[in-house]
Length: 152
Image (cartoon, rainbow, N blue to C red):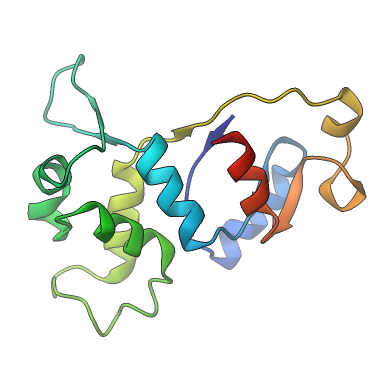
């Protein structure tokens, strides 16, 4: 299982509906995002070679080196804050006046590689059934938190 964090936009929700039988999605809490970043977070470093392209997020030095100059993100808590708040709320508190909050969110979300989660065994019946009928795929709302906590 892999997980990515994207903005909650109406046009993206329509795209996810097209992918419905293949994905499960919902609205995570800040605690789940913190667990994902701290336990499974990896940053892409475009400047590094092939071997060093993915850095485990284990210190603020790595975060500042990769995201500091361009987005003003200097610590792990900044990543968690940016990913867990709505970009519209941050428009007034933006330190980088040249970049909008949406650009900062997109840049940080793109710099983080997909979170690789543990595998779980699911009965075949569950894979073919939507979440609202006790299956696994589809929109989960806030129930995505319990699902992700099981497979982190």
